[in-house]
Image 1 (cartoon, rainbow, N blue to C red):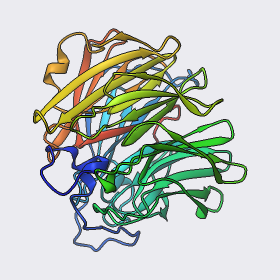
Image 2: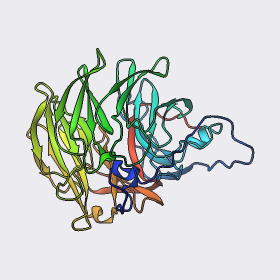
Image 3: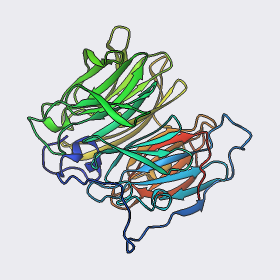
Image 4: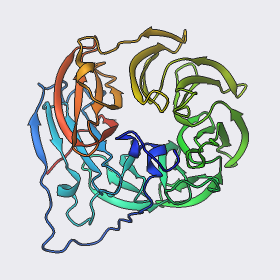
Length: 400
């Protein structure tokens, strides 16, 4: 988090931007009134069919969670159907007419597990659980200032800032909530560092990136290691300030992003050895978001500097085996010059196509770009506001 002052337009939905608003919107499930208008979904043909129903292992499509600018209560859910090549905008309200306020305020993470679609709604303070095949509402699980979600066996784990959405040098430590996915309720919590963000499971341990964003300029700089058998912190790894994202590669190493302080310390990428639980490598690659495809780590950086008052936007692929940069230009046809503010990245493991979202000005609909494995644009489609989080599925959407 930043102190309360000028923030670059658009970063209000990232960890440091959330502190600029202290209005907490709470959403509850109940019946709509008769005069409430449900915005209908919209379909757009963007591609030809990519797969067939007979190919059971292939990706049939993906959900895209649009964050919506903080305070606007405009988080929405889109779906891309790889069986037909159609993109469907804003499906949640139409599928769930009985849920008021729809998905709520600021969608921060999206995952599929155990046949369910889990959406973490940060400033509405709940995890929305849906049927992964239909996107129909199942339940909401209340967790204050929730951030990211991971799974292991019959449990879901959710990071929580624990306190209100505001800059506070005395902000309390955050925690990870443990959810029994059969009972759909929080059964335990484990205290970690300050303002924990992404979490990742490796073996029987959970790694938690602590940002300390609410305590600017005294950021946290640690990863908390939780033993999932005892659900207690067994180690704290010193890495760098303002940690954010985590990815576990096929060799078992954990990649970590540091956002820096937006002044003298820029964003960087680090590698953790889970055997020694120490930092074993670092790369001068700005890292706002990253995603793995095999041994390729796709990383884009949107690095803001208060010294120059400028953005530096970059796109890299790192080989996770060699830990070397393969390319600093994974969009090869010049389309990157049309993307105003990259905000999400994902790779289709079936086709190796990759996707980059553009948040634009953060208050209007964004765009989703699809690229060939070689980095040339295939298609572009309008999304909801601030398109951000992907969840690929091998089960086609049963949309009615």
